[in-house]
Image 1 (cartoon, rainbow, N blue to C red):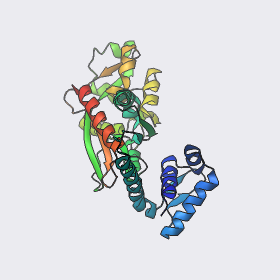
Image 2 (image 1 turned 90 degrees about the vertical axis):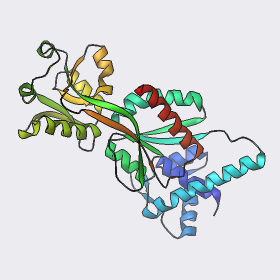
Image 3 (image 1 turned 135 degrees about the vertical axis):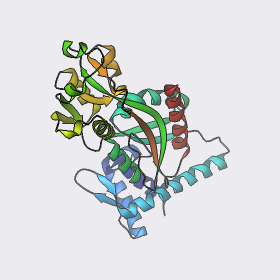
Image 4 (image 1 turned 30 degrees about the vertical axis):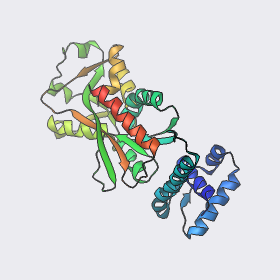
Length: 302
């Protein structure tokens, strides 16, 4: 089994594209295609499923991928040992992140991480928390960061930091006159901007909805959005009010564009998790990234 075939396979999986993988490896696309065909022929299984949009792992590909990574890691370790050089922490780490951590937590954390490990580069995938879990389970991402905990036997969940869900409203006289206390009867008459199903924020909202007895009567929904940023901007424009992550509206609060309301008698805290597949080969770049991300989150938590 040739290692250049293995490299091509891993590149295609990471890039989800034969053409992008070819550019990354500085070879032609037909060369990549030949490598994959030869590898599949040697193994006697189809490793990749090709579509008009992208390339994904087949069931056999999911099984083979961790072994492929292990083969390349073994090669790197052998070369480092033979050359008697200290292996540098160098490589690419793919992170799937949901909207809030992806937009409001990770940019600052990864900046600090790269100061410590400048030869680690990151590839970011964005989706809701449910999609993050699936990306980890399908080996599309080395790490996942989201706000939904999964009980899947193959997925490890590590608490990173706590977040709070608050009610965000436009900064208008109508809401300023409430003096920080939002009456429940008024809340039931409001028009809402919501996150989509599968979002960790939506899941947290549903828990708050039950606690406040908002589900007894259908709420008026102006819009459902696939990102916290779109929800935030829609509330700023006066489309409605929204239950959002406190992390997502810090800048808007500082600029005076939004107001926030808390509900002291209701548990509005939620946990942000770091996830990885238990069968994932934990390379030095991945373990170094995990260590640094957790350290930065501990500093944020105080």
